[in-house]
Image (tube, rainbow, N blue to C red):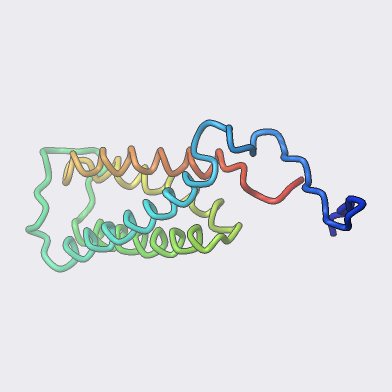
Length: 150
């Protein structure tokens, strides 16, 4: 429990701000985390839709030549579906302010980068866009300074 001092009038005195947490701090200190949560949620929804499309109809995506990391489209569909559900839940956790979601979000965004790198031959432009979004998510969650005081 934090110790608060009082002024002679009986009103509590405000605690001094921690370094890096003032209003003049540049960057995305609080809003970046919320935006990262929204991006993870949307990324999850779109990954679920990609997965359903690949599972339901393998003709939706066409491969671009030979690629080292080539899997069956049904396998990719399940990978995207499962990853999407976890991303979606993690985004909801971040938006709900749960501490575990920050760490899971970093890990899941990293897995999403790997999966989308391997998904490049099927949707090259979209995979690059998702990789860029996931890099921002990792940065925003790793740079978050709004957590509890040490």
